Image: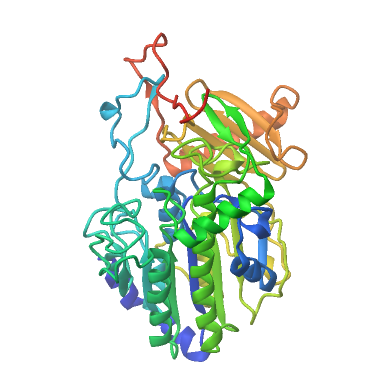
Length: 488
């Protein structure tokens, strides 16, 4: 049914006839924290290509994912909506219904949808209707077969299916065991292969507008790296005499230092793949009128699954509603329109990318389409957006130790409501970006007004809530606990 919508949008074709719109290259990293790039402060990871992209464009300092885990943020990017509207509010693969929950926690997580509805109008469908060639490479994780990229507006799908990571074959190395990607020579590295496929698509479509959406599997687990890069960072760590530093984010240990050799090698491999695509744009003289966006789907893993990175000074990491779980790198470059070396402080979130790209292409959403984000183009061209609140609602436990929570950020203030017990925390992010001091009791009026805004938004988007777990036993270990290997 939704395919018919685009037959009724002749104004889109008219828009591109007048003046060629920009090409779009969208890079989405997986589990990459804001502090994982050198241009965002990492002194261990080397990311020269992304650093270059930041110098040539805009590096946002207050960008967020719509959720602290992957699938909801991915759905939000592709639909321009808060995750609660699509129903995808947890990573696909978690228990779908409360009755399937078997961990000893005070609450049962809320139910969620395990596929992006075909009725949703995606970014790829909107651009395809306007004459764009559309391409997807990498991680999809938005539903089973029948709900893959080729069913959601992408002409070509290289590697996107239901899995949340490269779990088939030899994982990050060929043979991949991926139903949407043919195997390469033995030992071929997945990020480089997908970059090659992206460049082939760009070259084949250089004479018309295109969307190249490279959704990395990196730097998601399994933690695996090229041997040459692993050796490089092992030597660097030794030369710098780095030692691990740990803190506590109850009930988990939290890494406070970036010194994980394999993870650093994975970050650089991702950066090299970005560079390969950027070099192809340069080679084809497409750089000037190509809008490039780079971001991530949630914060870095700091409390679970290998504990490979630190988001410090941001608190916690993936799976948590604190800044380390939702604050992201965001770099946007478009030389034809955007001045270089900008550092916008505009708070931005996953739903903003859809309207931003439509705005850049001089397109409008379909009449029946509802977008929750705003275009970031005015902020990049001299017209700052008016202040607005951003919201989160994660009524789940995930795998990283966090508890169900909701949050609102409005200006300098951020309010968190913990959904197990309705406890409130208020932070001033201007003076306390590490969220170390709860000001809820000191500023009751701000706490109350933000809480009311959050509750109204939850009602508007149809947010679902956890319920009391009748089988919870407080005398047994809490299901949020995980012991870090090697810890005392």
